[in-house]
Image 1: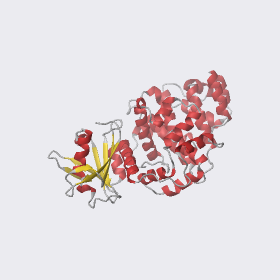
Image 2: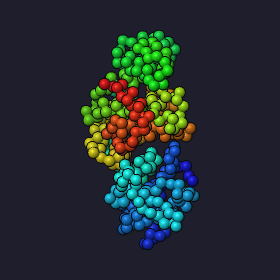
Image 3: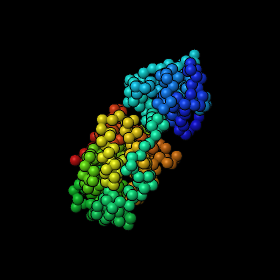
Length: 400
């Protein structure tokens, strides 16, 4: 079985019994994410209408794909999407037949995602990319221009003077200077103390002291908390009136909380809880960066995404923006010397970080259920595990 995503364009015989490379049916394959099955999704190609519903071709297409991938069809999640946008599960039977059934939660994309998980979201994005290739608008820059302009922008979102003092003190290893810089600001002090009294310190007495909080948390994590807290304070409003800054920050906190809640599920060490929280907190920073540097494009995206389903949002995003939001976040965080662990988890470009990347993919979905954010191209109906709900209750008051 290949470990890389793959797409197919197939033609089928008139009776639907034989599949071969050609035109008419589009298929996308996505290898398994952590603890999930590989997923295959297929649909009729609107550019080369095969004149019959996709369900008529399901058996032949399934057999062709399974043979090409050298897999047992029973180990996969198979789905087909009809011309009405309904999602059906394809279930291989012992006699060689293929049953076309409803997903357990229904025929919607959310029902499919509930069964297929993060891998299902990825395969739909891949399939959508074939069905409707990106069509950049006249105002859309190239990927290189987009990222370069973000990096060079004079109004690039940035923390304030306190972060600069904390950053300098952290480089000198001066915990006292870090605390001295933070103490005059009640918002930053409160955020730091709340972090120091989080669940992982339950065995120790709660503290109301900024110096104690700095010692307990360590200068590296304190620096990141100050970075985000100052950003929250500075960007309650910004260059894009259509952008909901509060919803963005609430969703960011929810993503950080969800990451902490998913550590055990993805077998990530508990000692990395702070890194996990920060990873979730800043993973979507690209949204804020785009809102500040390309407010017109962000407004266009928001107008077209109003009341749209996740697949439509993903398509609109590709039409308006020339690169993934993760690339924008990564480029921005590189500027502020965020740890490689965090940046690699966000970018997804490093195989050794696969567990972190998979955990983040689920955290983004869970967070959009805990605190929805319109920009995200994921459903708002994904059930949140109890561990994530508990973390969310502890962190949701980080922003008032």
